[in-house]
Figure (cartoon, protein in one colour):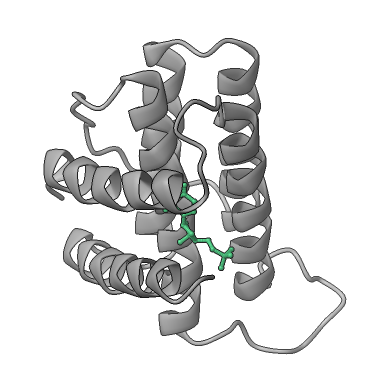
Length: 161
Ligand SMILES: O=c1ccn([C@H]2C[C@H](O)[C@@H](COP(=O)(O)O)O2)c(=O)[nH]1
């Protein structure tokens, strides 16, 4: 995944959103962190990984991937806001259950919220990528889906979302 390219693309969208909503001088970090937590909850909901009380299948892969890249948008946006956009992420695999991986990402978000260092931001990325791999997405699928959703987000702003 070309993270540097994704940061560039995210920057354009974020700048448009700031302009459209007159938020150029606002600190949006708390709202972005809350938005990420909410999107991660939506993602978990679509996977249904924790719903031991239900027999229903998870949403189709495309839907889960869409939720995943919504989270990715906010992770990139948080990095841009903090000036942490020059980073490399090493690929690691986890053998934990999907439920435990979600809890790990939630934990990393909270650790970052409380102490917004570049190391903690990197820790969040690492767990988020691990989660994506565990959900069955490869880097190309993630990038392609991100680009599609990014275009939709641009269009929404142009149409007064
Ligand atoms: O500063 C922002 C604010 C929102 N989004 C994107 C991330 C998600 O893809 C989408 C969330 O939109 P809702 O469908 O949840 O309204 O907007 C950004 O990329 N940057």
